[in-house]
Image 1: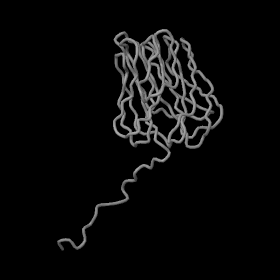
Image 2 (image 1 turned 90 degrees about the vertical axis):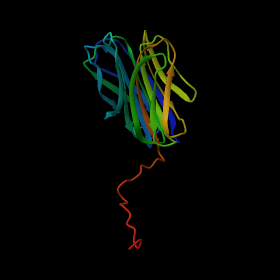
Image 3 (image 1 turned 60 degrees about the vertical axis):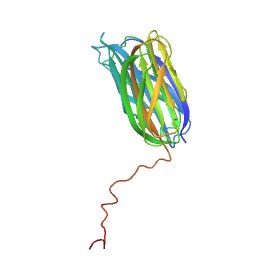
Image 4 (image 1 turned 30 degrees about the vertical axis):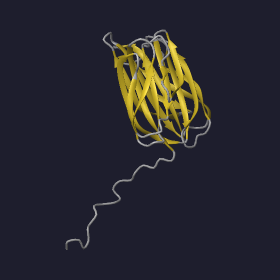
Length: 231
């Protein structure tokens, strides 16, 4: 079954710097995955987003993002990037952003997991409430969901029963966190965050597939021909 490996985080100060880096340790590079959470709060004119994430010099793939542009033109954006079978040991993560003027400091973080074969479904969502949530369809009962949330809330959000918060960062009224859940069932599963007053938020969720998962192969069996029936 999938298991949690490690978490790391760094605070990116407000301003216009386009890169930041920190170290993360992966205990085993085989059948593992590294998920990096990037997030930023900016004004509407800066259109900030992450352009590239690397770990140990290798480029990650962006899986999904959540984006919320409020009536006051503030943008909240969180992104999930991943690398399958990352290099084991302690290595540098580097995040590069484009067109960035960060209104507030923002936490960037990473989590790694073991015994996973890759990602499945993803979800990006946004809203304005005290309980950010999103429903993702899990492919198999052994899957986990990984959720990142960014919110204009002055207190740390918490998860609900069955979910685990792995890392978080609070800078003034800016909050970012990442957590995971192993619901033990396939189909629609909702990841919930709660706490604080109703505020704008952006949410991103991805599915981790267990190493035992085998994708169905289509196209190998054609239409069946009934021989000797009614002939």
